[in-house]
Length: 331
Image (cartoon, rainbow, N blue to C red; front, side, top):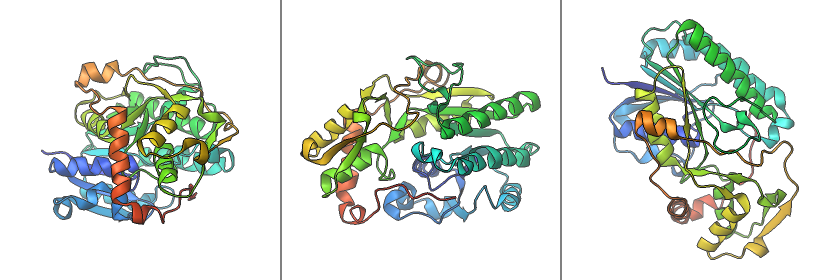
């Protein structure tokens, strides 16, 4: 029987690209998100010719609509659930931590309790984050101890630990992914790469927290989607998989690279601001496990990926320039 996917957080950047990937493989996909669908230029699957026959969307919120979600799951009987939903902003989690714990822990636990007895489910893919490791040395492997440093990271680590023990003790078909910093066309404009591009094409200046000295690995969305799909279809249950490149770059050098590609003046547009509380200086994921077990490897270089993202912005410039660049919090 061909896999049928339920994607929770279908409006998210990664979730919407994953849906497009599954539709291209002729899977039936049900998407749910707490907000109505975004504008078409943020959702790649909207231009997919197979969309009408392969995809259904429901506006449902794991915080408020759990009984409806449970009924929907029983009706559609998806073989695979991929959960991208979370409160994901780091800095804002200090201001309203209860919202982060509600979504990322309490409601996530309720969701698992609702589906744990559903025998038709072949895999539950939990999209986690390397933030759970905190400020740790390079070459992080999947068994690295957690050391979260922000309310956001603590909420994710808490549920990750709970979910793993649920999976082990009740033999649930759960798999985890933790990806490096994902980017590409369609990403929310408040994220560092699209925000930098936005600044290049507008009159806006941008603030660089802490001078951009922290280092990250950035990975193109198409590479992450391919990896996530492989994990969903072939990942051994109760496993964790890192998804990353081997290239690290400081945020400062990343922004300078973007400004250079856009022929914009970095010195005139960028303002150095204070560092965020609890920000991790570096985390570098070792992805040898997924490369060996699932034969995955990244294909898109950072330079190529940034240029693809700039091209998306240029194609949609008139519409994007009217969008808000700041994060809009939703409870």
